[in-house]
Image (cartoon, rainbow, N blue to C red; front, side):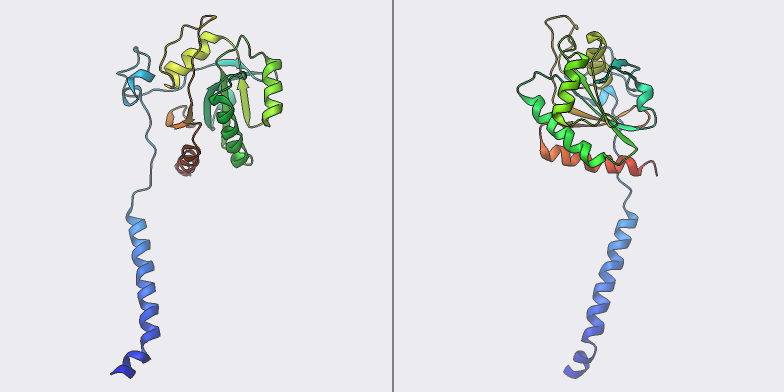
Amino acid sequence: MLSFFAKYKFFGIVLFFLSTVIIFLFYNALQPPKKLPVYQPNMVNSELVDSSLQFKKKYHRIADFSLTNQNGRTITQEDYKGTIYIADFFFTTCPTICPIMTKNMADIQQKIMKDQEVLLLSHSVTPEIDSVAQLKKYAVEKGVNDSKWNLVTGDKKQIYELARKSYMAVKTDGDGGPFDMIHTENFILVDKERQVRGFYDGTDKEEITRLLKDLEVLKASYE
């Protein structure tokens, strides 16, 4: 009896591993592919959404915009047409969270450098300070690649409305006045239809890892 089992021991081991692989493949095949939510205003913390939008349940998209980048070029939604992009809000003189956020965005830039589907967009929340020259200086210091990443300045009211009404990323309304300033650590993932697909803490490395994984999920949904 023992000799019988010894004779077929190798066959049994192979059969066991083969069965395990088949079961694993069937399990994965039966799992629905992961999908990212399409965030509507009614799905987001009401503190982050303008009161005029809090009960909106569908059709939310990033509004049209016209701003100026670090090279003095006008940047609009058309420059991001057909691409996925990651947006944030910062200012060049920020001594606290912005340097961490910018470093993490630079790390993302390295990951997507050869990816034609993905771009980056950083909005200055102190456009009266962040002139084109100031943005260019900051861009050079931080290793910004002009083909992948726009740092934009422009009309303060427009930027603040984008933050609150489009990206749903800040807790204060802000009136765009000379002494007013918003601040948020959020990175926002935006799809090719200008819909918000994810929010991430731009100061947290684990959140950046989650963002990159979600980015791959979003890209796969277009294949």
